[in-house]
Length: 352
Ligand SMILES: Cc1ncc(COP(=O)(O)O)c(C=O)c1O
Image (tube, rainbow, N blue to C red; front, top):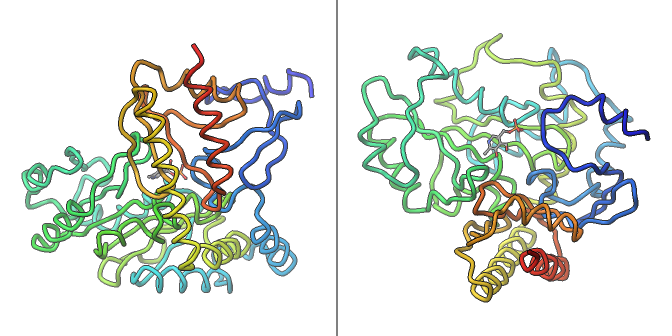
């Protein structure tokens, strides 16, 4: 393909001049035949790795049966996935959509319509500061929304105690607790949903990324009391389409298993230990996160530069902050692949 073809693509992001052509499990190949060990996985999206068999099978079977009947009609995979997600979470109703942003948007109007202004009405407070949350509450406050682990911000845990305290605080004020589990949900932290570590129940939760394992699928889940959409409040051409919903069902079937989640937790601990040992050895900082959503704090190196060097070494990692590298491999990554990643990372950190 001539480079002019790439020039036809709007420049919405800085991209290296390589073109990815193939993926399998934890590995990606570019057009020149170079192989990369992928610890980004579409930004924590490909929870079962690249082109997993269960997703291919679900796409083929559902594609042959029914791809799209419009959101004007119910379809079977839509009902099946909604039921499975509701039962797994203890929440009551589910709205299926295509992206995390859309799911989060749907988490707001329920209360935004009661209390204007709608979406802009957020007050931000420091993560983990319960007193700051309490101070920010006034008679117009109807909900608290957060990620159990802030992903894009650099992998900062809210902490189980803080989540429990927030749950108690929001209950005592008759407010909703809304969890954005788009990055932490679907097994990423070693439990199906991140909040389960804290033993709490949210009123509303959003899911995305891993739910579709590589296809665009997201969900908004709400308790009966918070599920207040009426006809016309939300919608979209592809919402709840059978093809994506069938993939969501296959993903839940694969991930929502005790042994699978235990392996994610164990492999996450192994990766964290290896990162801690490397960090101690090379004089870097803390390792943050849980399960297979981890970050390594760097000292004296620019994380973006390290990620770029890693790419040259055949390793994909990402740098959410100038001082942090993030690791979000496939949930079925092997110990051997983790070891290979550590060797490539060590080489990338040593490079000056
Ligand atoms: C926690 C969280 N919420 C929401 C989003 C937005 O999701 P999407 O890019 O699918 O719209 C992201 C994306 O990175 C995310 O990490």
